[in-house]
Length: 114
Image (tube, rainbow, N blue to C red; front, side):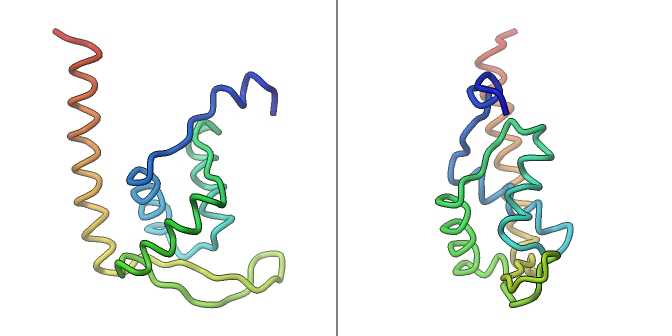
């Protein structure tokens, strides 16, 4: 990755990361590294997820019972924790998505007044 590409990457706010994790595991169980890479890939490498942010967020979501965790084997044949969206998490994903859409709309109205 070039220096220009690194400068164009954006760090995520805590609540935004939670939303993106919930959305990512909605597609199926995934281990931490796969979650981070999926967020980066699906944002065309604009969003970066650092381990120092990812794992505290995963623990927070487990504590809230929005995701569950189970041991498994990764595609590299290594032991890994796989995170899965819970029914409570699915409901919260809808709530968080609505909050995000409302916030994004409000910011857009300020940045591009009529």
